Image (tube, rainbow, N blue to C red):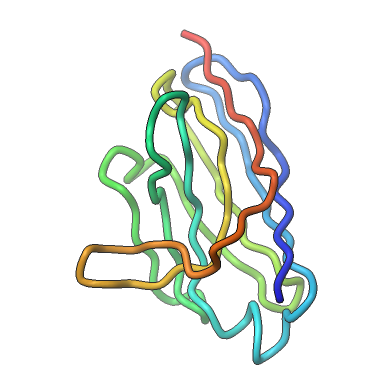
Length: 127
């Protein structure tokens, strides 16, 4: 099993930036973290959890939810078992708890691979 710990959230004003980091432990080698696409998800109060960004196992392909394209950048370092989310020009609608998880693509789009979650990291953007 892979354990995921998110960090880096905080309170920022609109237009500001944050970098979120997710660190994996447990099965992080070639049969764990490093073999899976990874994603950042977020859940705003009263809303369903949604996918924000994904990155392929080798970091060569990325995908973003439309509202964050051009503002967010996902990256990973398999040698450190980390996946980061650089967020620029943050807006109040980006306020949510952000989570990372392994990701799998289906006909319905990207979804989480693991059925468990870390504690997440809170991002709050003030107007």
